[in-house]
View 1: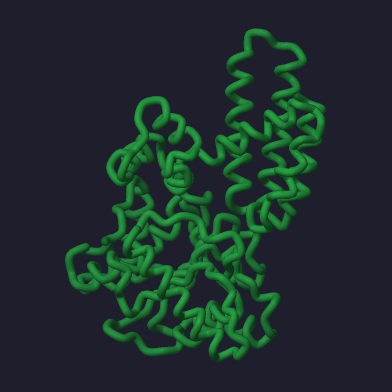
View 2 (view 1 turned 60 degrees about the horizontal axis):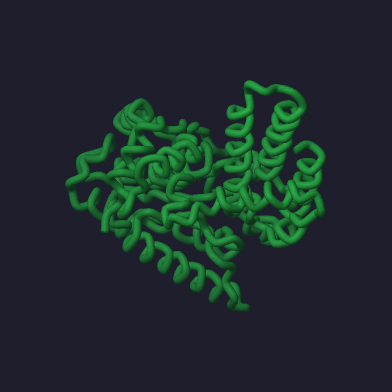
Amino acid sequence: MSLRPIYGQKSLLDRLAGALASSRFPQAVLFTGPAGVGKQRLALWVAQGLLCLNGPGAPCGSCSHCRQVLGLGHPDLHWFVPIPRPKAGDPAKQVEEAQELLGEVMAQRRSDPLWGRPEGLSSHALASVRLFHRLAWMTPFSGARKVFILGDAERLIVQEASQEAANALLKVLEEPPADTTIIVTAADPHALLPTVRSRLVAIRIPRLTDDEVRAFLKAEVKTPPKGAALERRILLAEGCIGRALRTEDGSDGPDRAAALLLAAVRERNRSWLPMALAQPPWAARGDFTGMLDALALTLRDEVRREAGGGGQKIEGRLRAIKRVEATREAAQGNANPQLALAVLAADLEALL
């Protein structure tokens, strides 16, 4: 199965195509933008353009190399995503295990190109860094160059590694082999080490319009929502297809979590405490932020419904929205999600 087409981003694609055609595309680049906006899909489009037999430039889409990239089968495309930490004790076997795990993820994405967030404790651990370094210095297999994509780079763990491994990654970023392009993606660039970030040329990926998200859902989702459910999904997506797909199974997870938290807060007996304790470590960059988005949206809906009444209820909800937004910002850093949710819930009890 091939990757889904890119929706929207025409202006950005035109600029990227121009940079590729004129050989001005940087060797080491950082795609930043909101979670779910399509950074890795755009990175794959750039990889397709770099590897295209009729390029460089905008990919033709029909040559054998373009088709291989669309099928995630090009031997000179290396896509690193967060994976569970290898269990082997020997470092060499850890690298082999990391390569196998990445192969399994790519096989899953070939069968279902609408991928979601990595599992909670998945990361780019030391074994992945070593594999990245090894492959970067190999000669291309079938073309003139290699392309590396390091997705969700916020989960890059170099502090657990030896200084040698950290330096190896930095060396590749600082002086990539002449036949190599590296594209790093991150929703929060400040979560990267400053030494890593300073070696990358940043390109901001903008949000999509509601119409573009709507068109994607109608065309690419097996059973798209309809009517009010569709519009609610689009509103929650805030221009990010990945967010819209997060509830593709119909469970409306973030909405439900937000509703449960609000109900617990309004009971005023700290019944929200089990919810805070249940937050897993990586949720600060996953389901937790999705729940916070849904919570802020719910509170805004309440403000609009009661706008005519004014008074303390409106003021309390407006202050509650600001607290939710502050918590969401903190969640993009190193905030402990359990503590963050507990503090937020206690504050909401006093405001709502």
